[in-house]
Amino acid sequence: MIVKMMPAQYGDCFWVSTNKKFNILIDGGLKTTYTKWIKPLASVKGKTNMFIDLAIVTHIDCDHIGGVIELLLNYTKKQSIGIKEIWHNGLFQITEPKKLVSKYQEVKKDEEILDGIIKRGNLTEEQKNIGVSESFALDVLIQERGIVRNGGNLRDAIYDKTGDYYLNKSTKIVILGPDTESIKALEKYWQKEMIARNYRFQVTDKIKLMQAFEFQMSAVNNYYAPFEVKISGTDLIEKYLSNLDEVDSSVTNCSSICFVIEEGKNKVLFLGDAVICNEGNVIKNIEKRYGTKYHFTAIKLPHHGSRYNVSLDFLRRYTADEYYFSTNSMKFGHPDIDVIADIIYYTSKYDKKLIFNYPLDVVKKFDRSDWKQQYHYEIIVGNGNAVVERRYG
Image (tube, rainbow, N blue to C red; front, side, top):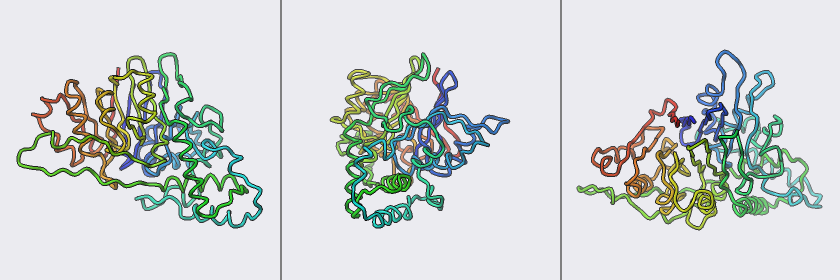
């Protein structure tokens, strides 16, 4: 198995190739991620065809869907971009269509509300807002391009009851989340936001409704201040530790698709921007499948290593040979220093590697030979201008 962590700025974008040449794209980072990284990886040398067997969009967030939108905007029959299937939980996967329709006949006001959301679009740090100039959302593009979604059933979400997805006899994807409650919470939040705008749920244009849903939900961002510590003359790693007992409440993050890609003895856990707390169903599902403790090949930390998205109990019970931190630390200041410290300190009996795709200032605090020897860890840092590749035999 080969895992490529792309420099997607403050977003996520991973390319996974199995031993049978099955290519999986996990999230797409920002808009520029497509041009710089996804397109070159997906292209076959000397041909115009592109091959992606499965694209997984973990949740609706601008730093995860931008590159996928750009990919689909460039999807034409002439280019023959081969995307066999895509996983994405859009509006009509998280709610029943009948809930969106009423007998209310005053359509004009509803149209104005939808137009207002779409016009405002999805603000990002990039100069050009993703998909706004074309008025396209990812949900719409998937439907218009005729790509198989979520195993072929347009009405079903990908969630923890979906079941294992077999790529071949030796490789499968074990889906751990989101749970039903998280999907319902996302639906409830959407309904509440639209009611607050006096929307009457009179569906006259389902395409426009999908656009408005995605633009509205991808604009939901909860900001949490990073963990701060005072550095003294005697610097011990214990000074950076914390209990990680505060929890992200973002409904979009909680709806992230979480899964393990298994190939033989290799098991890589991808957690999107999920909230892995002690009482949450994701950690319960991990326990059901892998026991109360387990050592993975690699773990992609949730929400770029945010302290609000992972519990100390999880870090102690579920360890790995390698930990992925995917971010340039811009915008929200991820990863948090206490998450890195807790991993190093509480897994000291294991040899491990911390993988960063950008040279972050926070990494320098842990680049110490004495700590590395005592706590058994290595640090691998990308330069932010090249793909970080990991190979597992």
